[in-house]
Length: 456
Image 1 (cartoon, rainbow, N blue to C red):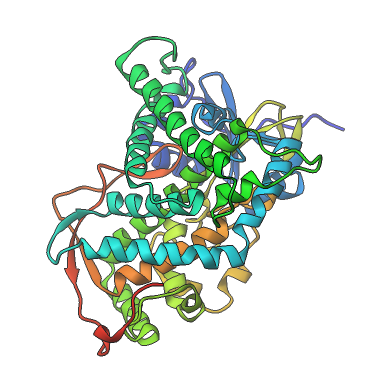
Image 2 (image 1 turned 135 degrees about the horizontal axis):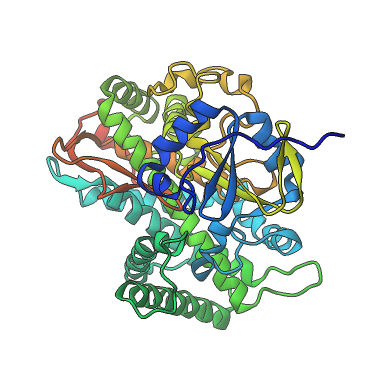
């Protein structure tokens, strides 16, 4: 059998490879490479060979059919200071066992229970809003989803700790990119950034471990995820260690608010630019809810709300890339993928492929009507990943985003502040640099507005 050829790709800098272009123009640059080189190409990021694949069949082979040959990438391993050995960063039998113990907490019935927390928290946020205010909608969505996941995880109203965790996570993100690639500053150097980073991680550990110790002392099932995990046992009958609990709580805290907050942020950003879509959304909400606050049970009756969410996740996927590392040599698309190579799959590019999405750069929620999604190849749309490593909070997010979207759109519409540019900041997630500033406008929906009841 003849040797497999090497995939095509740009030469890049002799030492840095394509790192300078990725750091400066990541999404635009990678999208251009996809259009230029096709469904698979090779780049070099300093000394790390990486293969970018964008054909759904190739992605399916990595994430589903041949997933055992691919583990989490070096990029995620750089984040273990925050996530430890939680399900986001772990692999193999340890990951499978942790996932098995976590899964019951994300059952459909449990998500229905959590939805009451979602409704209560978003109602509390809306009580503080005032007509005509300028707000950073990204900050608001981060705060409310952080409050929701904190109560779902810990079963406590930990408002002060939540704010501190948010500040520490902000420092983590500011410093994270400096720890990747040739330009990385060694963590042991006592630079101002490194000192802030260490303090942030130390404070996160202190807060989360303190909550865990309180729960361990009580040993009472109060309906939150931490209580459930304290009573979970692996196949050998062993409970999670305090270290394991800390890693899973930190992982779930981050993933349980970051991606939903970003999904909501980008949805408001898109709706503010597309008044007809906003009008259709509010008409549906007014008709279905008739002035009531939305509940989990209302979600099946809000199909356009779901379409808006799907289209936002298509254009601005919060987790905009899935990255794996090949364990053994393999073949993708007729090309050799050596062991140790990074394989990157960018939802940002795949979701904008005209082969699968007509007028792909346009925000058109109505494209999701009927059976459109069933006509797509399996991995042409994968905002939360695919296969065994599909995000464990997939169902949680698919309830939280439309529920909060409906609750907010029922009362307010938004206008973008014209002199505030919205810039993309791709890191672990797709964040808006400097936030998304909007003017909020109180709306008066359909008739029986004042007759609704508050959230349970």
